[in-house]
Length: 185
Image (cartoon, rainbow, N blue to C red; front, side):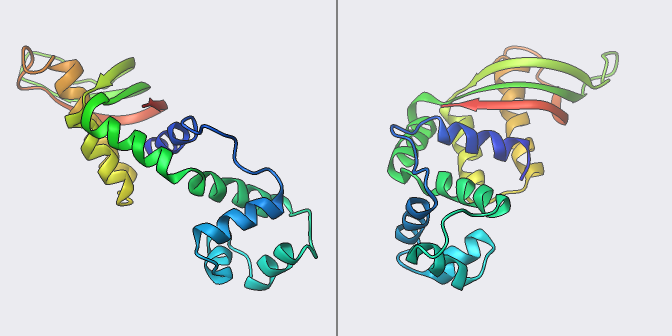
């Protein structure tokens, strides 16, 4: 996972209306519901054996080791309240857009006589739905971090650097290095 992937996942968890289950048994049960009762699918998601999942569900084991505990947390957050997350993503893609806060190094391809040195900038920019939609679709399809960076760079290029086409029409923007990246719906 990359910086943008992580930021979108964090933004999803901020949408929860209730806290996800805390105990390992409740977490395993949630994953079983999400995987339609398949212990094999839950085991693959967590990177453990099928028998390990069965032991936790039967109550034979109660305290997972650190790696399993972290995997459980990660997968439960992905499976928790899917309709709430889907509704908010749909709303961002159609009406409200996304707000991106980042500190990144932006590289430029610009006309002769201007600088094209990458610069570290801190930006907080609202991306309208027409730029949020391709980002969310690419993330849902499992796009690489490089592709997600390109989509974000095009959105920031048009909205922030070109001010919706009113200036710097020949400017091409690339994100070369990300210090931090945060997204809110």
